[in-house]
Length: 561
Ligand code: PRX
Image 1 (cartoon, rainbow, N blue to C red):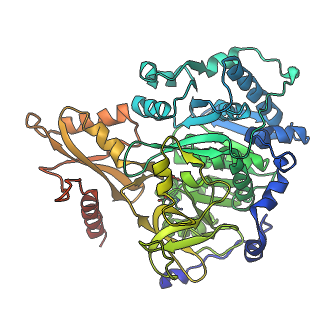
Image 2 (image 1 turned 90 degrees about the vertical axis):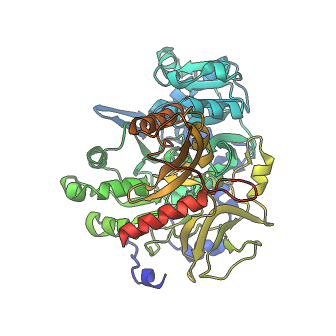
Image 3 (image 1 turned 180 degrees about the horizontal axis):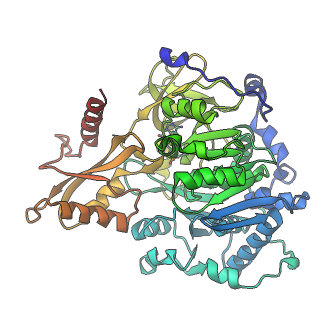
C-alpha cells in the first residue's frame, strides 16, 4: 500500500455540501437527516411524494426534472409534468386493482416512462420491481415468479420477452403506449399518495450471489433518508446541477442514484437511451452541460481506450464525477485527472446495502486504488473468519456495523439467506475482502465467493451454469470470471460435451447464443472452453470453480509480465 499513498490527489477547491468530513462524522446521526424530509412530522411517508411531488408543493413545479436523450430525440419534463404523469399511471394501476404491498414489475427501456412507472407504483404503496431492459425470457420469468408479481408495466417491444403463460401470478400487463394514449385530466388533482410506514416495502431488486437463482432484495421506504443524505454529500447535488447517472433503473445504482437521490435533492436528471458510444456520451455532456456524472469503471476504461477523442468535445461543464460497481483502477483515475482534468470519486456499496457506505467525498484527498472512507454514520470492520476485528493493514471480510437506513428489509421469501449476511453479532457481512489503512481508507481485495462482476454487473455463476446444461450438448458446466482489461472480468464457461457432440466452433457459438437468447446478453459467456472433466472436491463432488478461476488469473498475470 505504501507506494499508493504517495500518489494522493488533493481535492479541487470549491464549495461543497459537506465541508468538513471529520467534524461531520463525529456528530452526525441519521435522525438529523429525517428532520429535513417531510415525514418526521407525521411519522408516515411516501418515497414517491418525497422524490417528486414535494417539489411541486414547495413551488418548484416549473423546474426541469429531466432531459431524455436518445439519438435525435430530446424531451424535457418539469417536476409538475412528472408529478402529473405519475398520477396518471397511478390512477391506471388503481383502476386495475393494485393495492398496497402488491408487486408490480416494470420492464421498460431507459425512458422517462420507466422512471414514472416506478414512482407511480410506489405512490400507491405497491412495491416496484424494475427489470433491466436486456433481460430475456427466463430472467424475466424467474424474477416475477419469485415474488408473485401481479402486474407488469411494459411496452409493445419488450412484451415479446415476457413468457406470460409461465408466470401464473401475473394478472395484468399494462402497455405504456396505451397509458400514454389514455386521456388524463391533470386538473383533477386527485390525492393518490398512500402514506406508509417507514418499514413498508418500496422496491425489489433481484441480484445474484454465487449460489442459487437471483434473490429479491427488498428495500423499505425509510431508505429515502439514506438516498437523500448521500445524494447531498457524496453526489454533492445542488439544485442547479445537471446530473447524469448512466445506469438503468433495473439495477440498484439506476434506481437509488439515477432516480431517488438526485430528485430528492431536486436536481435535473439526464436519461440517456441507447447503447454505449464514446462519441454520443461525450456529445451528451457537451450538449446538456452535464455537471455531475456517475458511471462505472468499465465505461471509463472504454472512454480511455478511445485516446484523444475527448479533445473534440467541450467537457468543461463537469464539476463532479463518481464511479461504482467494480474496482476502479488507479490508471483510470490518473487518466481522468491528467487528461480530462477531473477526479473520479469511487464509491462502494451493494444492492443489499441500499446506498453508499464507503465513499470519496469531494473535499477529501483521493488515494487511487482505494474505494474511499466510511460515510458519516457508517462503521467499517475488517473481520477474520471468526468475526473478530482485524487491525489496520490486514486483509479480511469487509463488514459494516448494522443497521443503517438503506439496509435491505428482507430477501424475498428467504429468511435463511437474509440471516446469512448477519452471522456475526452486530455486523453486516458484504462478501467482499478488503484492507483498511491507518487513515480509514478501504482497499478492495476481491470477492470472498464465486460471484462474477463483469462491467460492474453482478452475475451469479449458478444461473449461467443452469442455463448452459439445458442445452442438449452440454453435460456439465462451471462458470467463472476471467480477468479482462476493459470489463474487469468476463464470463468464461468451462463445459463438458456429450459423446455425440464433437467440439466445433459452430456448436460453441450455438451454446453461447442459447444463453444469450434465454437468459440475457450480459450473462452469456464470452468464452467457452471444452474440457474432458471439471475439477471437483473429492468428498462431495462439488465443482471447484475457484481452481478454474485461479488458473485464469495466473494465465492473465503471465500475459502481463
Ligand atoms: O464486489 C463489490 C462490487 O460490486 C458488488 C455489489 O454489486 P451490486 O450489488 O450489483 O451493486 C453494484 C453497485 C451498488 C460488491 O460486493 N463493487 C461495488 N462497488 C465497488 C465494487 N468493487 C470494487 N470497488 C467498488 N467501488
